[in-house]
Image 1 (cartoon, rainbow, N blue to C red):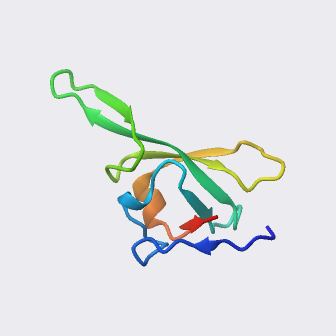
Image 2 (cartoon, rainbow, N blue to C red):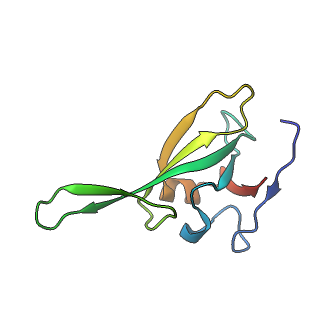
Length: 105
């Protein structure tokens, strides 16, 4: 991957970042086994709330994470050529797994 990305000092902890650190456009680096060093951009955040009257879940799009259960959609921006890979995971999985770290580009 050629470039070295500086880790974001998110509340002095780029590894275990908080809800207020992640919003649309945030960049996160993957340090896992399958694609180490890849950079991902947050392109969507969805929250789900249960309607008390109907019991059904309603989703809403957000600019920033509100709860640990919010779904985060990521797009890989480090692929050359662009492959448009996407992944979705909950904020709790993203923030408590040391294989994802906030970065600035």
